[in-house]
Image (cartoon, rainbow over the protein chains, first blue to last red):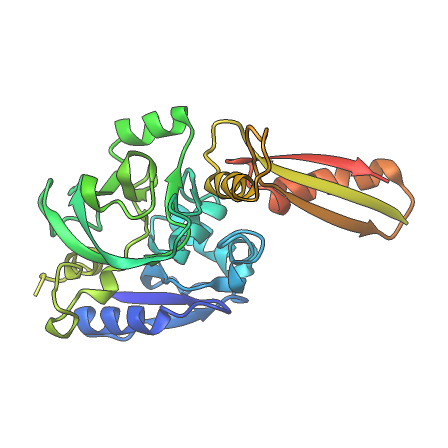
Length: 224
Length: 80
């Protein structure tokens, strides 16, 4: 399957994402620069990696979300192409209106860089089929603005519709996220946004492989 | 030339840990009587024409589309 990684000024997790996609799919992803207005038709998974696009100026992901490439991503997503945003990528998808809610400054006000535990709340999505519902997986986080917020009505809807995909275990929520939400999908189920970095837990050298399942699911490879 | 000042604030009900931290810092400086602090942003825009109606409409659109995240923020506009 052909995948693509979006690149924006200030992102710094694109290389780790390219490595993960290459190692798990066996094929290097194409890279798409922020000014691109077209994404090739044969790309089946688009990933927006983490970092500090535009220095987090104005709001995290706010400027990146208004770049031409994101309109192209929006059009592909509307056609059912899988899109995955990690950390800053999640912030960008929210600012682009492709996912509901918002991400705010961590409740502790500190940048948090550590490992958390995630419960897989929905194992029926194209990103989580390799996991069992209720499975707990390890995952590293590194962020200052991962505090997920949605108003009462939106929260009830996404919880009710099974759009919450990952939740921090009670004692490992690193940012005060409402309902311990760590990752969500859109109503259509083809756009995932998550704060933790699964691309950093895919091989023994990382100290674990808990993150592989997300890529294996999205890339439709047998989880190795 | 028209100057527009946009003030962006958090909606009620959205937690503001930064505001809380500032409240704590004021208390540490021995200022009493501060019952709450919420932090916002100010944008000063210089509009290079004199059509006030157009300026108001344009700045409102700028707020909706970029300057405020209307999921969690409100905005107000003052034309000078």
